[in-house]
Length: 123
Image 1: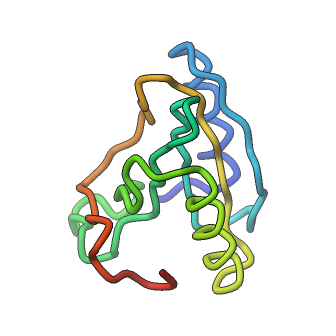
Image 2: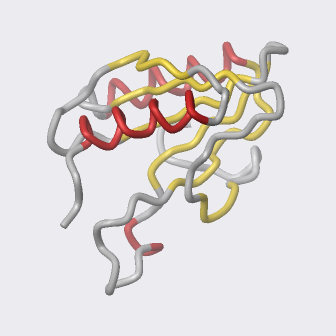
């Protein structure tokens, strides 16, 4: 069984703080099942944007897992914010969590990276 987005985000923020990386909810989405996006802010004007992994990436035996995919590696923060604005127009129920970590650690289960030149939804 998959936990609600609200519960997952709360636990994730606590985990980031436990690792020494401040985290904040920038946008609250649907409590039950809102998509979750994570910004790993490197505190140098750049960051990595993580989005929910495609459903095809999930193992049938573990449907409750939350997997992420890096969709904007080492991108300028204004570019990440523009991308999120486009995502919000597509899905207003999404969550956005920002983690501040100079090393760019996001503390997520990540399946891979989408290269910057790869076309993706709402880019």
